[in-house]
Amino acid sequence: MPLELIRAIVPANRFQTARLGEAAQAIRSIEDFQRLVPFTTKEELIADQEQNPPYGTNLTYPLDRYNRFCQTSGTTGEPLRWLDTPESWEWMLGNWHTVFDKAGVRPADRILFAFSFGPFLGFWTAFEAAARMGCLCIPGGGLRSSARMHMLLDNQVTVLCCTPTYAIHLAEEAAGFKDSKVRLLIVAGEPGGAIPATRRHIEQLWPGARVFDHHGMTEVGPVSYECPRQPGVLHVIERSYFAEVVDPVTLQPTAPGGLGELVLTPLGRVGSPLLRYRTRDLVRHRSGRCACGTSDLALDGGILGRSDDMVIVRGVNVYPSAVENILRATGLVAEYRVTVREVKSLCALEVEVEPAPGCTSEVELAASVQGALYDAFALRIDTRAVPPRSLPRFEMKAQRWIRADKMAS
Image (cartoon, rainbow, N blue to C red; front, side):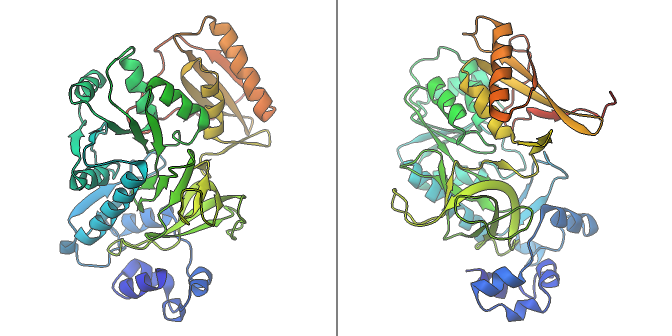
């Protein structure tokens, strides 16, 4: 529980001890914890590392106790470095064992990790956890998509771990592939696995395989697993995390069913702890026993978006995940890009869509997408078709939303 975590890190951890102050001695219940412990933000952690390079002061032990290094991808700001002890690494492997177990992964499975194996946490812990389960683990870093597909077919891979974007890209690169034994795609790293239209698209590209969503962060570790009975619902591993859902503006608890920000306290990462960490992930939660038998906190629709990704267009809140669901639902968009511009202090969007092979009219596709966006948001969003294969493809986190320089009009 969080109270045990505080006793383990104060006063050894300079960062957390300074933040808690005298409150550390007054916390005797969960209610005290939520009332007295301030939220932690990524900006605070980055500032601490800038002032105390290279690793900051959020370390409970001397440096020689740590044996793992990771850092965030830096897609939303400065990269954040993170160190782990053998104990905290083992804790994360246990979380991944839960993910694999709920997904139905068994020792006989052969798993391809189509992942770059760079410095961010990604599938590092998944790879090691699967190996300990007895699975044949195949690293797919540093390879072209064609080589990965040959590896997948030659080794009769049954489970593929990658981002949702790359699951689409790999299937499209090997259009018409046969004899795939893949029965399960475990996707993470970005929204998509829980976006209904994207999920359907991936499962159409991989006949006979189920998409199983998961999410985690370098700072907190592997957080959730998809409900075996309800696709699109994520369960937080509550034995490992104290989870809260709060209003992103008021920071007050959100009632079940309401949109809120997921706040996490990892209970097993004592060497580099986080207390009430604001993930910026937006969710709709419900508690109680699920149809699958667990009481772990349920997130309906998985991660619905990020509070720092939302754009406001003429007073309307637009989330990237909502746009993706609309575009994928057409079945005729192979890839897309959204440009965010600021015109006279007002936000405007421009959408480029790349036609899928079955599209017969690019003009009609653009008009159809523009109409669907208008129906969803009551906004006229400029949409145009671009030539096939003209938009970039991504192996890791996709960067389909770009911000243009401020422009006058």
